[in-house]
Amino acid sequence: MSLSDATPSLFLDHAVTVVPHRAIFQAATALLKFLEGGKRIDAKILRATMDAAFGQSDAEGAWMWKDAYEAAETAQVLFVGKYGAAMRRQASSASAFLVMLDRLAGL
Image (tube, rainbow, N blue to C red; front, side):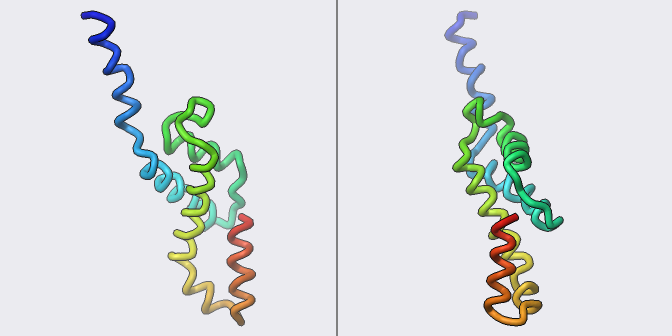
């Protein structure tokens, strides 16, 4: 077996296993659990979640912080999709509902 015969298989495993948009959605789904628990999503949680979803770190080039922000925003959208109607019913006014949404964005 020559080096050229072995080289493609070294890269195929990583290239085929991670589909970026799926990994971002997987991270968003995991981040949703933090939002549901009322926990703040800080950089440490975001990095750990992205590393787990992509199987490698940003330092290794697996993902960029732009991807992490996409995952966090997607988690917020999932949260509003799941709990938005209940939040709106609990809000005494449209401005109170906006305050709730603003708090969610700050988590």
